[in-house]
Length: 206
Image (cartoon, rainbow, N blue to C red):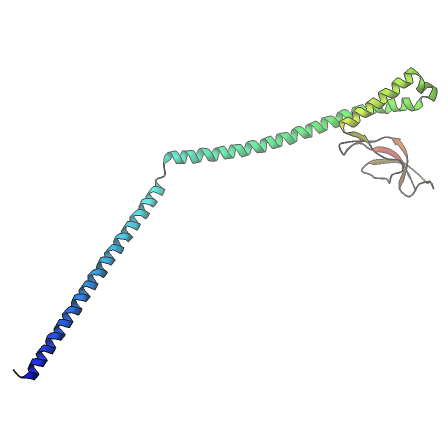
């Protein structure tokens, strides 16, 4: 065998060895890739199985939990209805009390008017008498009681006429007063907690 042939043969053997080494590396890489792919598939399968279990668990909710949720919902609805009912009841009771109180005040006012007229009709000598002093004390006590209840007299004379507070029954031309000013109070008016119980009966000037 010539030297050239030997060199060629040795070169071919080296190339064969290189190819075999590369082939082995490719096979190892392929096996690792396949193993990794299998692992990923197993993970995906596990995830799918877990999701399916969760979905199944969601669908198959415990009956006791459903009953608890239903009872809780009913309780919340009933509690809300009760709160609304109590609020309405309190408002109705308050409104009924206000109406009843105004009705009582309206019935008391004529008595106040009569006592006021009686005291105004007394002379100074009569006011100093025991009867006059007694009438005056009763009148003051009655006014104080009404004030404690929230009843107050409406200011009229010298005030600008206000149809919300005053009831004009007479009119006069009077230079002592300005335009649309109450010149005389014919009957005192009263309010109960900012609500007019009786309008003041007045005479309006100009």
